[in-house]
Image (tube, rainbow, N blue to C red; front, side, top):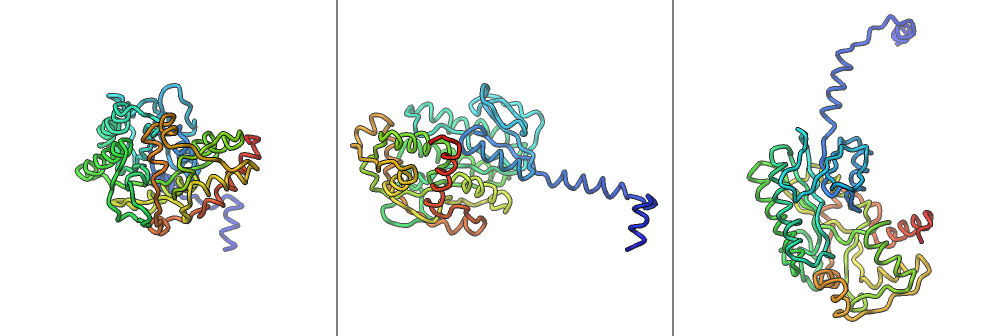
Length: 331
């Protein structure tokens, strides 16, 4: 060993440049190339950040006028465009998150973006990607009553929004199989964090004492912290868990009333009251209120086999989010 150190100090040891070059080539081969649609959204932007932090080569598909992560390759385009110029790029995986939310009440617009847009995107990527991970929600299971369900539960969508998303999922699954593209789908519970509905619709209104719950919040829901939503998606990719569907939610189903009351307690706000369903539908639309008030309880055993949740229950998650919001003087 001492003679090796002597040679290194005195510059007499020869460095094998072929080995170094080979190592660099290997590192390049191991750096996977990822495309994220919906890359500026609440979940998509955090997925992009996490993938970059983990060393992936990330491309963000964003609409003109939006600002994406400049550490990623930026492709300007919309999934409804007839042509998207991917500039000869090829991808190991495409995370497809781009979609309209249930806040959009126009069925034709939902079909144009969430279904036809998905079809157009697939035609653009079918020859340049090895795999696709599609992001959807638990609404695909519809009315399940008090039954605690897992991924074996049959789909039974009960809103136009979810039916359209499910049509897009079926299209991607069937066509991915035909083109020998690996495919997986993640069905998220309600994703909460420092932005999105949790902050804009719940926390802000709790502070103003203007938040009201349809049916008084007496329906069980399943939630997932945005960090765990992102971590689960990456786990599906890294564990190569394709050919599967995953329920992504924490381990504690809870009534929306209990969830909202706990959030209110963390910011010293009053517990919210109730609002008649017909009034809520008039403001937010029938689909959104039906999704919100349809109770669901799930097992998350499948995703737990490949991913450990940072926030396995809503209480830990809400405490983290509200603490972060306070540190930023946002509440």
